[in-house]
Amino acid sequence: MLKNVYSWGIRRVFDGAFRLTMKRLWRRKDLTAAELRRRTEAVSHLLDKNVRPGKPEAFGPGLEGEWFAPDGRDDCKAVVLYLHGGAFVTYPVGSYRRFSQALANLLQARVFLPNYRLAPEHPYPTPGDDCLAAYRQVLAGLGGNSEHLVVGGDSAGGNLTLATLIRARDEGLALPRCAFAFSPVTDLTFSGASVNENERTDAMFTKAAIGFVRGVYLSAPADVTRPDASPLFADLTGLPPLLFQCSSSEMLRDDSVRMAERVRAAGGSAELAMWRDLPHVFQLVDAFTETRQARTQLRQFVDRNLTR
Image (cartoon, rainbow, N blue to C red; front, side, top):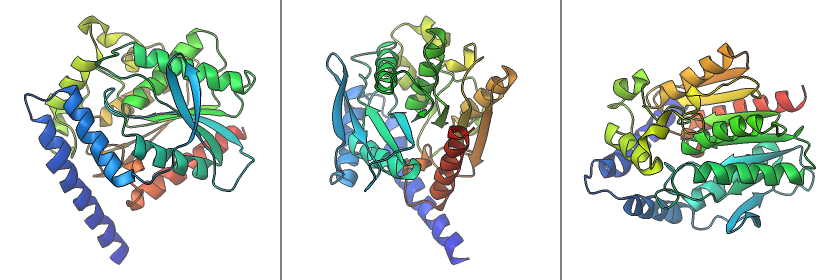
């Protein structure tokens, strides 16, 4: 009983904090990408300023990422390429360093976190190009053998995860053993019913927010249905097993639901897990009981696919 009350209280605190910060920020008609970046990265620095960086490695001209390894372990059973979220605009580096280290410990894996270029300075397709370059680098480091490779990401990084899989398949590259996406953006037309149904219950986003993200990321509106911009509209045959996790109350709920349905319709394997009344990408918030459940499910999914 007390555990349930505590969990409810933590959710309410975070819900209120997101509404007072992010949801209010999106309502500003003069919001710029620079201001969004400054605000989100300042919060990340405040909360995660003592997080240790990973081991740096370049993966292209002017491009660099960081490697994270399990605490106290030299042997790893997997390698994970993790593509961070941030609306294609921002990179809260402290938050993602913290999560990448947690992911390394959870999966007993080496995790590569690439610092791909961001819009609006580098709009579509540059972030996707950088992520594919990072995938090539990680795959080359494994001698081209993807047997122990996993790819994952959240939100915009979930979009880039799916786009990377589609492009790697089309180019004949070895595909990872499995992949996962936390609340990915899969449809930049934002045609899912949850965009309207959940605008009030979503603690972070508004219709103005998703319009802003699309406008900043896509320099040409006609690109909105291209398969590496909106993976929902891609040919989804031949992809590795996928795990989608989302919240029932977020505006992007149906991006996961419809993507899982389309992967299955194409003959693939897609698992979908949905938690009630949690914020977008709750898996990065250590305080939630549901975060532990979601991470346990992820570990079981990866373990099952690495041993199949």
